[in-house]
Image (cartoon, rainbow, N blue to C red):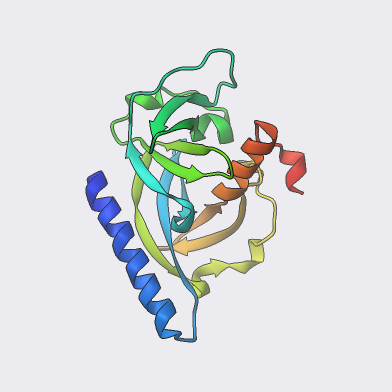
Length: 184
């Protein structure tokens, strides 16, 4: 596992390459960068564009009488960070994720609040071309991820769901919980 500094440096490098590619206005295949993470023993991809920062486990203040998938509140850039346990949210699996040394918090900015998605492990960053996206599942509902995966990509011979974190954050801000029926 790379250090958080190396991961952030990698993100910066990929962003710069993307900017250069956009400036040159090359036609052809569209590209994007994804983070490959582990949630409840399952591997998935998350678009790198929505992630503001990757944090190592931080001191979280617990909050009483909230949903079991809310790990607590942290502090990020002078604001409160609502930290959500991805394994508990998507699969109902209770684990002591705070004891995992490889656990990371993926920070996503909502319209009014900041959210952190705690994942078991950050496996790396991959650059994905549009021909690697499985369009046959685009728009199809995937109940394994509460409907927050609307496409899959192939990375190193493995088919991975792509989680739509912006959609999840919007849902959490509006309803306080993921509302599966509202996704259809």
